[in-house]
Length: 309
Image 1 (cartoon, rainbow, N blue to C red):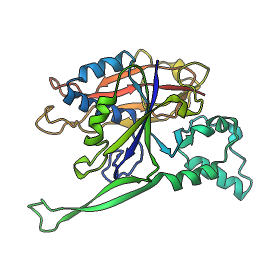
Image 2: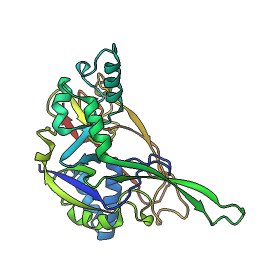
Image 3: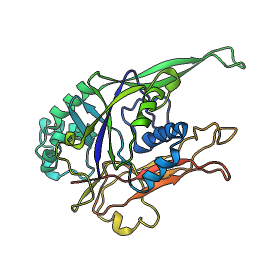
């Protein structure tokens, strides 16, 4: 099964939220990527083909992770080796611990060293913070209120990447996403697209950019690369036993004018966050999170993509 790396270079700011308009994240999960690709597939008349490919495992995607130059970053495992953290017996050790805690991503070139405990957290944090870009918060004014003389301010968060930085995601399978990406780069990724946020160009590379990182479910420990959830049949005590993970809640509103006359909420889901580590794997699926009877399906991508650790 072929593996490709899709690097996304934004031409302006981007808005990736976590439930608030003021959020200014620099990465997004696989569900956000799939939703954007699916909307493009609806325009192109290929939505059923995309969904079928995903359900058959011929199009597996990771969350979107940051890159800086040639360095691709991976989620920091939630099961860090004890040898990588010193005892807090000095100011230097305290700085190292704080740097470890602050890092959310590890460069692929240093991933094996991180697992061995041979990792300079302070240096890597400095490189990341200087190289990735900056978040910002803009104050805007609502001028449409007819029942109030005073214009009401509100706040929009966003992120501006440095010229050499952006996000990338991993694609496994034979399905060709290029035609969808060609359209999506003009539509934009993330929120506030009507304000020009999220437009990008992209380049596709092979898996050698991952510096020997092994994707798949072989081995005894597995790192989750896509925010995902097991099916009811896959969820068991043996899956959770010994795992180190974080559960996150995802909800929000349906972004579809044909779904209902008024905005409707999606069904809340709890998913395992990328970076979670398991002794066993699961597949997951694309769930229908629609709460309205009779309305069209509302999909949330929650299939798992794994890496050996």
